[in-house]
Amino acid sequence: MAERKKIQSASQKKNKQVLLIYYSFSGQTGVLINRLAAGLKEQGIEVFFEKLRPVKHLRFPVGSILRTYLMMFATFFRKRVPIRELSAKCSREYDLVILAGPTWSYNPSGPILSFLDRDGKYVLKDRKVLPLISCRGYWKQHWWGLRRKLLQCGAQIANIMAFSHPNPEPWRTIGVFFKIAGRSPERSSFLSKYYTRFGHSNEQMEEAYRFGKEIGQSLESSTPLETINFQTELALP
Ligand SMILES: Cc1cc2nc3c(=O)[nH]c(=O)nc-3n(C[C@H](O)[C@H](O)[C@H](O)COP(=O)(O)O)c2cc1C
Image 1 (cartoon, rainbow, N blue to C red):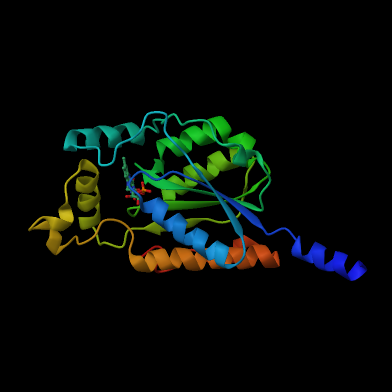
Image 2: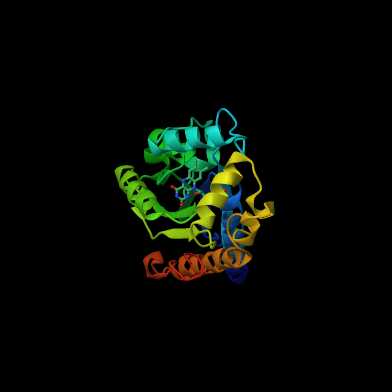
């Protein structure tokens, strides 16, 4: 009987749990966190997703060059994008919260800023938080601003993951701009010579998967996440 109880309690041992809060405008953060989550699950971690949903749907692509300029201008001044209420998932306890989203004009994106303003203290205070940034190439200023805000919310920052698009400059800037506007630079007879793909590469997706596994192992063995090197050649080429 005692043996049975022991087996039962071993099988009832709670898996480590991770909450993944994210926003993705053009799908890049979305693919990275899906691979990251697959790596976490591979290590037996339970993953819960909370997608931030703007009150007014943001259409990608925005549809014109002028609208792209206007969006870049507004986001440079950290314009907030109001988001819907969070689900009840966010009020539970987790072993780790991953907060993921794109860089918008050197800042966190509007939905993430709204989340931090409205819910940051309530969801992140005294919690271990690991941010993930998806960007074209310039993430440091975003990271500094995000770190300041996370600390104001009382979060315990565990480390930072950032992924930048692997295309060389100036083509990635030109390519991303046209892509947001709704053009297809990778199909233009001139640009396609220098810009063949928008966003992150398949190798970077696999790097995200590897990161997920490493985070999972670290949570399972209670080793600090601070010791993981996320700034690899693949993530930040
Ligand atoms: C309005 C806007 C502004 C952006 N500004 C920057 C920037 O300042 N630096 C950068 O590296 N990438 C910038 N980007 C590119 C995105 O960060 C990048 O494409 C990212 O992978 C998009 O992630 P998502 O698909 O999850 O939205 C910007 C994108 C948008 C839509």
